[in-house]
Image 1 (tube, rainbow, N blue to C red):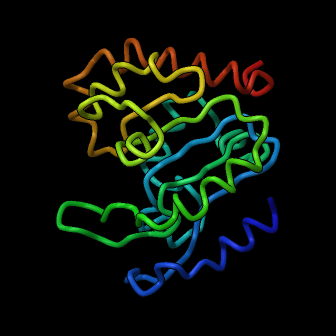
Image 2: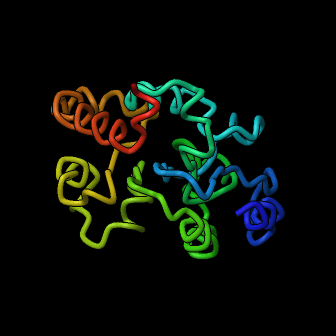
Length: 193
């Protein structure tokens, strides 16, 4: 796994398309039992090199009821975005993750984690890539989270921009988050004892 992560850290596949240059940001370890597949690093994460080191990450950790120590323990939690580098700004937020990363690297990264019990699919890009029958939209996919268990658990993106979505869909906080928290506790029981 270390050799693979070193190779990924030097990846230049889409360097010509990245305004801010490549800086792959991910973490993984052979012992991981939980993986979080997000979209792509934002500008803050591009600067710090720390996955989910922003407001979205704070919200995600709150959803998971997980402290920073557990979240960033690479032997427990793999943080593998769809695009490993910051794609740059678009008209209404960050650009979509680059399409080269997942097909190039994900299979090898996940093959190195034999103990995975649960993969959280954060956002539509991850859901469309991994789920054979996602819902017609993100809301339907998240609402049908039971359909993808025990392997996958779909989530909306935890960006503060999605607070409006959460307000329109109170079932997410009432029904989905408790189930998510239970599944994460089952995957990482020693972190919640």
